Amino acid sequence: MITKNKNIVSVIAHVAAWVCFFTLPYLVFFPRMLDSQYTMSDHMFASIVCNNVFLVVFYYLNTQILIPKLLMQEKWFLYITAVISSLVLFLIIPKYIAGIVAPPEIRTFQRPSLPNTTGRNWQGRKRPLVEPFNMAIFFMVFTVGTCVAVIQRWLKTEEHRKETESEKLNTELSFLKSQINPHFFFNTLNNIYSLAIVKSEKTAPAVMKLSSIMRYILTETNNDFVPLQNEVDFTKNYIELQQVRLTEKTTVNFDVIGNVENKNIAPLLFIPFVENAFKYGISTKSTSEINIHIESLDNKIIFTSSNSIVKSENNMMENTGIGINNVKRRLELMYSDKHVLTNTIKDNIYLVHLEISI
Image (cartoon, rainbow, N blue to C red; front, top):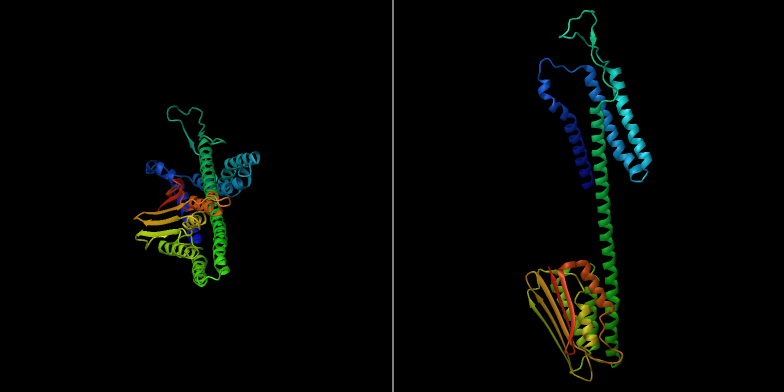
């Protein structure tokens, strides 16, 4: 339906443009036409009609065939030859057809300032073979047509480039999400496996929490944006699932400030940072602390996390993990210059601060 409407508008625009173009000479010479002594001969009228028809044919020949097939294919010689040939034909064919349809009238007159001593009549001047006015009109139609065709071609190419870029971004985002999910499940299943090994009573609740998390990922993360409330609930479920395996030596604080309703955010942006906090910030031998904070302002969402750095030979803080790299890339794609992400280490505490403008 949209394509049909665009075609109708395009046809109307072309018709209106040609009407304006063909009536312009009449508007210019309108005062002269009001002179009662001025009359347009049949031959002149036929010449105008033939010239206009030829110009219309040449315009669409140039824009629809010559430019796409020759100019855009960089066949310069053939294109220039075709244009020059069209000019020659324009100077000959309309005049020839007009002469057949309405032969030119031969007018005779005597010079008013000199007596006619010979009795011969002076014939009116013959029209020159090449008329500068017709050549100017031809080159104007040629220039306008070429400019319009080239601009349309450029706009179409630009639109196609944007569509391709958008499709590429969507594909990349889907790929990033597909990487996040297995990475997340791998760590979570390891936690539940550890509970199952010791036959902990926490195993069944942990499985239920994992089921809730899986349902969220399967049903909502296919969308580009999800309600902020759902993302907060998802983060809370994940934290509670991780707490199942923790000892009393680890303290976890999770708080949400502000109104999280009626706001949307890209899914799975917080979880890689929360996951890293639990992966690198807990210990069974020494005390450790994890703090997760989400604040919702009028036009901004702030996420912060901090965790103690627990050092061991096989467990060092790394900023190049799959989850962190993916969330950084997704922030670049979806929020571009609308986010600020910093991660620092201070007094053996790893800090993450993320601000997203909405």
